[in-house]
Length: 449
Ligand code: PHE
Image 1 (spheres, rainbow, N blue to C red):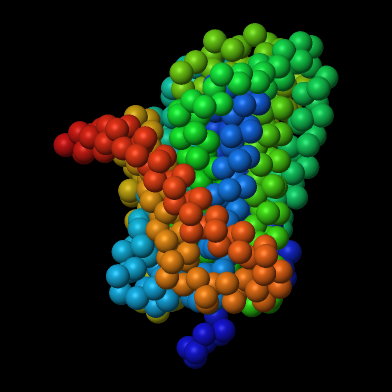
Image 2 (image 1 turned 90 degrees about the horizontal axis):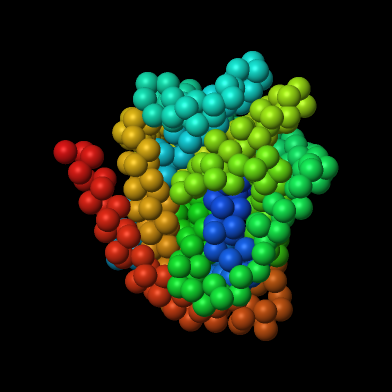
């Protein structure tokens, strides 16, 4: 609790916190980007590089975010300034900017997902999924579904930490896991599915040292683990108990990886079994929104159930992530400007809904926004978080971690990863990404003109 008059929101249970953190991490990024990047980037070789980055950079940074959150007991936007000093205020603004920027386009993709889920239930997804996706993904319809999804997100966040976030995760996450596991078991029964597994995971070791694999794995890990923008920091700021934060980070990261990996075990057998590899094409969304429903379509009746299950699962995953994105902005308004939670949720949600409109009318804009905010800026946020915790706040952070993790040796390993390994990896990756990011910025500006 802070010193303010009204008690601060808090999780009802420790499990509620973990589930919500997993809910934030597991999202659209797991279901399509991971499998796609893996198949493109050397299969099992990509998975190895990805896991190495998660262990060396992702988990230490997630632990750092948890530490700052629990230590500060207030929104990240204010916390970094109060703990680090005025020079750190821009990091807080960057977090809020990332929350706004990512949710703006994330909600558009979630809107497509909602449209697919509803049409799947109504049995109205046509066989020509390419043309259907073309209609769904850009234009007035895309904008409307984006707005509806934002209203859902606002409603959950307005309900508060315990009554909104925790409850929504408690309902949606178990259902999501159940559907995913059922789908993965079902996928085993597909004829020729084995070719899909082989395609997904064939180890292409020649790619191990490829710099594109490194940047793809780093970008994917940040986005997928919800790192670099204070989302998990915000969630940890509603914690008061003394759990082992490093262990919680491992739990969240492994669950996130498990879901991403398992999604690939659904997506690729379907695509392979029905010979749809050419439809995956260049675009990362192709696999999910075009090839997959085309495969389900060929299954006749059974396919109707399967595609409903799949898109409902995706919608749940998207919603539990979207609420964590909005919560970063809302927490900043509640703690910083003393707005009421409900008003803050409506106001921030409205701003984001408007910001997302260009992405709803133009998927190139959407992709560029993702490249700039969802990849580059997240890693910038992560880099400075590592500097803040590793160099400016280390004694306090270490003491906070020690509350649940008495083992000093383990804490030294964590500190070294945050001080040396994470910054080096992030600086290298950011350097590789400057060219593509610049192109994305130019793309964004040209659309605006
Ligand atoms: N981790 C979410 C996903 O994989 C996206 C996200 C990014 C959520 C950053 C919160 C913060 O879909």
